[in-house]
Figure (cartoon, rainbow, N blue to C red):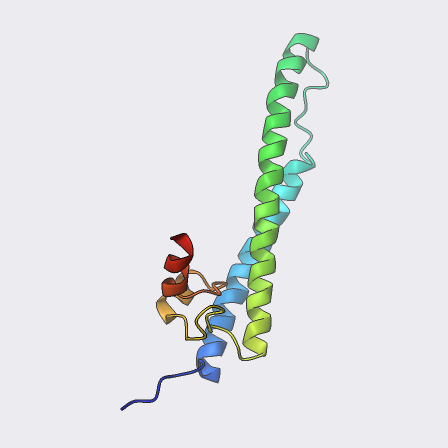
Length: 127
């Protein structure tokens, strides 16, 4: 009988680390873009247009700023989750389901590298 694997090997953890670092770099760039858009560094405002048009623009501008703000918050949370995953890699606890204590499937971690639940635990949660 084959012994059940209790953690990923150091080589596998390095593979996950590389994937997460790549995703982190991309996520940080996207956050920078969102923050730039939120602060209107490009100067595309309606300050020099007619008051009526400015009033209509301001309404949509506020909605857009709220959407960008929400996207930025989600991106920050994603970055925090990826950073936490890197800490779990360093502690060699990465890929262990926090509910079942079993290894999370490698395919799941490749798709969702910050996952802390196996599909089994995730499905139980939804019930």
